[in-house]
Amino acid sequence: MSNVFGPAFFSELEAAGLVGRSFSWFPDGLVMYGDDLTGAERETLDAVVAAHDPDKPAPPVVPRQVPASQGGIALIHFGLMDAVMAVVNAAETPATHKWAWDRATTWERDSPSFNYFADRAGISEQQKDDLFVFAGAVVP
Image (cartoon, rainbow, N blue to C red; front, top):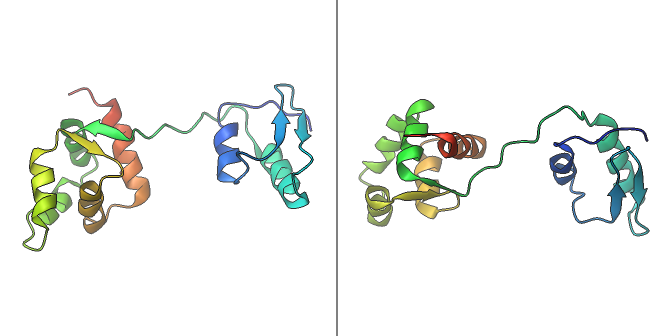
């Protein structure tokens, strides 16, 4: 296989479930299989290598935490603030989540409160990641 590996290659391997399996790759395109790599894994690896575009940039890293002010700016930017505020102000929203919303100085991507509001506002997992990537780049 002659291919040059670009910055997105690792994320492509990860998406194919190959990270942690035994094989090596080299900048000149050579791929060496480990002895314990199954036939199916070899086929998957070959397909990833064949489809790889070395010019494709690596996907953005999703921050696990962002300042709440920047998260709010991201919600406004994506037009989602009204939907989230409707959930925050809903009578059935647990007091613990309202407390967290009112007092948080940071948002955690895996926080139960953040995900409570986002899920009930109809924000998808991809949108949550996009919010955090955008929020991480905001300069208030």
